[in-house]
Image (tube, rainbow, N blue to C red; front, side, top):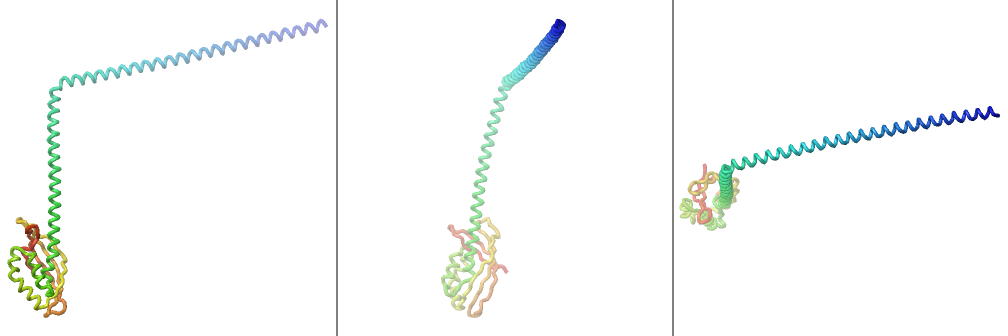
Length: 249
């Protein structure tokens, strides 16, 4: 009984020693972990401080560089302003005068172009009116009718002036009588009218191509006639008239 009690006491003592050793080891491990964590935090703090210091230095350097450049530019600008002030005013005056001349030139060019456009448009309208007049009145020349002999002759004379009026005027009545006597009936087809020349005196020469179908007592069946004419148109009191009529052979 005393021997068993001694053995139990020895085992209990060893158990307590082992527990004490384990506790000591655990305490040492906790201390080491705490020390390692403290060292890591210190290193992180040192790195953060170093980065902040670098950024501050870089920022300060950048600001000083910008201030230096600004001072240099300001100094150059002031120097140029002071040194070029008289020349600058002279150049400004010359530039202003040049721009004024350019503006006047552009305005004159615009006016010229506008007037030229109007002149061209007016001339084109005039030429078109001359062609229309010729086309309409050639039919009176090459396609008269005995059924309205006097009217046919009068229409030819109304559209005549100058040499042509002097040639046809005295023969107007004879022309009408010949239409009636031969019982002339005719129709015209004006195929082409074109301006040949604009004369210096304001008249216009035109070339005319046309055909007509003619019936009379001598040729009761329609006969085709081909016409090649050169006419000169003159403007008289705002109206166009034939001043010359000639057949091109």
